[in-house]
Picture 1 (cartoon, one colour):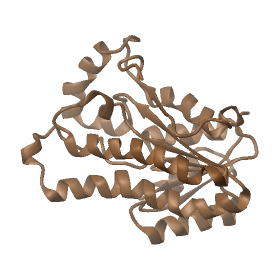
Picture 2 (cartoon, helix red, strand yellow):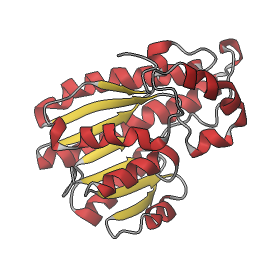
Picture 3 (cartoon, one colour):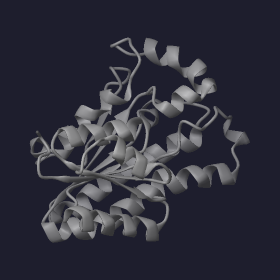
Picture 4 (cartoon, rainbow, N blue to C red):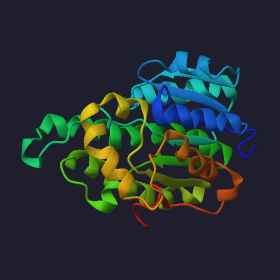
Length: 249
């Protein structure tokens, strides 16, 4: 029970990686708030615990993220952990750089970068009052490897890695730790539904790993639980790559 007594907010927690993270944190003793644009209440109910609630939230909205933080405090009295998992990936198609429009860029950056900033901004005042907390940004291994044909996505996750370091320095004096977990290509619900991504990337990703098997959402849970726990109390500003050894960081 590494997270017993803690309250964790998981954005994008209604399905896929986010739901696996919410379930894992709950199993380690945390109370969990699932925040998502759709299906949050149902996803929380599926966990079958009175320590899990769902809140509708668009992370790119300052108003909605502030309402999310308020609802979490109303329900459980505090926020110890924020997992910035909400992001756009599984719906994307491999696209040449010159074919990406400004709208394509803004859609991805609004959620993957500004969304993480807005969610963090909403919970930081609560964590300051408590004397500390843990922010865990879900990034990606793609910025380290320079994956082509998804430049807007790769750039967004590169920004997340940079924000992780800068925020760790800015918030450290308040006892707030900021770290990131960077998964490899993961067979989430959304990825399984995107046959283009699945057919193009599944086998090549598997073969690139030292541990040559598919990566599943549950493979990311342990790293997030660790960063949320007392075991990581003196770790901040770090990005941990979890990809079966495709990239050594």
